[in-house]
Length: 240
Image (cartoon, one colour):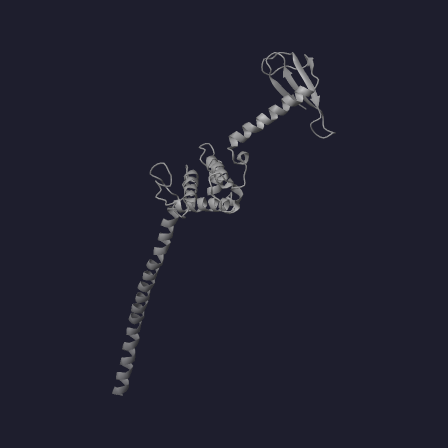
């Protein structure tokens, strides 16, 4: 009987000690889990920092020298000079990191280099094309062109084949379009017989002495376009 009683007491003591052990194990596991979480948070923070550094902030005017970019990539000095000139154009008012802009400059130069059969002589199409490209890139009033290239919307292989008019700033394109319309207007007026009437009023000087002529500028079922010129102030307009 005494042996049985001792055995029961021993079982009871083990039962009482089991929750403490389980609690201790749980606490230990909790600490381990906490440590793992702390360790896993480090890469996340690093990624955020890297993401924040994607926007490059310059201390002064951007160019290859100030950005610490080395453009001596080839044994050919002409090609290196071209890459530097392209970089200096692409980085104007840009917040893209130097490595991104340098990669683009290299790709543009390489496209022209291969297109012109590796001839970098000063009087070749290689030099002529790149002078045109860098000149348009460096225009202060042409941020649209730089942004399209830097953002990947305009690929180097497409850029190198653009005409000067296609590369021109949007403001200049509109101006050229207006000049084209005006020249067309003048050319049409020179070949058409004009009539003078007082039926139209000039919107500029309010005079009623207006010469006009009519042309079919659209499809046959559309009304004629009337081209008017004020004989007093020279103002011109048209309507359909």
